[in-house]
Amino acid sequence: MLIERADIQVREGAEQDFATAMTSKGVPLLLSAPGVRSVQFGRGVENPQKFMLLVAWDTMDSHIAFTKSPAMLEFRSLLKPFSTGGAMEHFNLY
Image 1: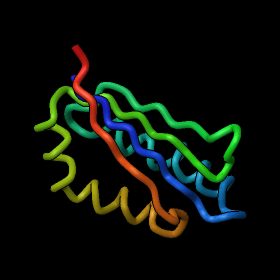
Image 2: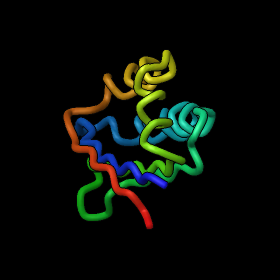
Image 3: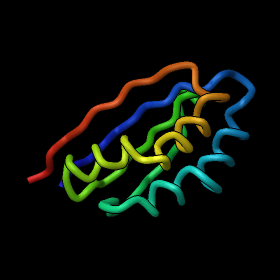
Image 4: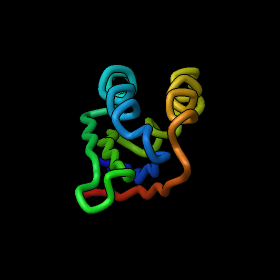
């Protein structure tokens, strides 16, 4: 199993709108992707402009397939109005 961890920095004042967009559209979109086992999404306590997204994938191949799909374009367009940057990492679980 592969865990994808994304830290998403959101512009000041847009935090609640971003959280709403992610919970209503972004998380369900990810959950519908082939190979996704689970999605967790949360907001930073110390830094409320920072959000974390954890996606459990069956394999790196399923993740890569998603990045080449129309759903990825839809997901990126959801993030674009809110995000000011971030970072992503992948972890293999044993």
